[in-house]
Length: 147
Image (cartoon, rainbow, N blue to C red; front, side):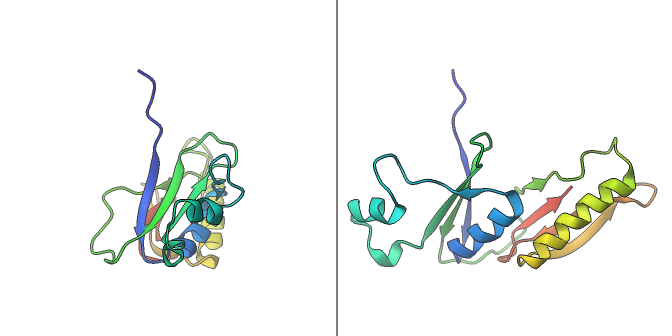
């Protein structure tokens, strides 16, 4: 049995702003419209989706076509509790590398994401006191880690 394709979908209040934040975080791009349509607007119009719903969703893709897609869907309710699933942005290179190099890489990504609207919730240390990872939230409060 072949593997099932999947996309991680994040419920949100503003799909466009969430998509822009995560494009900055992951280096993803907007997913191309389905074959046969030049734009998503043309696809939506062909399927009679009302124009006031056109900004209800966004889908991002790995520009190399290797990693899973990431979708955003506008929902009426806000976030009410801690995420039970989250992304780990793996930028440090791993614990086998020098702690100072890992810290530098993590902090560089943290700074970039704070500039894009993210918030640092806490920094967790390894035994010995060096930075292990930073726990952050995107602009709508969804937690993720920079590892």
